[in-house]
Image (cartoon, rainbow, N blue to C red; front, side, top):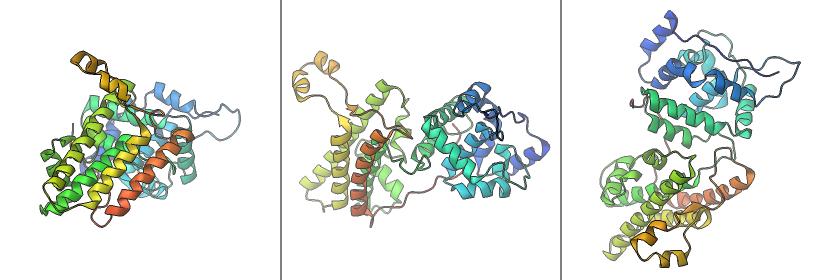
Length: 346
């Protein structure tokens, strides 16, 4: 049988209001509690439920909306599957969102959560879940949609085979190149501060944040804006290469890790990006021709979260390039940080 529609209360109970007042850093849980009825309206819950086959017998499944909320929290906080189940009994903030305050037993098991995530990915509903959540944050306010996108897009949660997409790979490589340059210059800044400072000086402030995709803030499911964003990132690559080349010309101390990061970025471009033909570029001799020049595109389509095996193989090859520069720079690179609970309001 298909899962039921989840209809938790809209107005918080006195006990829930007490929890909300006590929350200081976990602002996401307060925001999700306030907007869960909008985030999971009956239309979207019906769309989620369609991933289950209609069977006359069997136990009623857990409402997908409840599992999806837990998945969003898990992706944002970086919790493991075991930690999610534990939090549903031990953490009143999670209970607040999932309508199980003071529960002595979790509303679902680890196996149910894992199976739901697999079903979500197999039906390509994972991207719908992420994009609808970000769109609601943008329209309703109260939580930073850009930081939310950065955390959810960067989460490794969406399957063991899920790897970074092309733009994230390029962004990480370029930020790593800027970071090791900042360290070599001895600026006395933190890793992120050094990246932001060198990015600003290089004329690529979009690389100064923790996520290039969050900085670009595009509709990643729209092919036109996606290709435009890809062109912007390729421009970032050329500018960073120019900064490194200028350092070489001035006789500055070499930074092999920066060179390795740029080499990895170029490898990603060579295998993932279809650039305009050389003949087309040579023919673009005036403003009108340049205006009509073809933008760069991804060779085999956008590698969506939970994408097909053919797309995943291409992404894994790109990820192997990232491993090469990570190995070359692991002595100077800071670790990836789990996102904090508190994010500035939009």
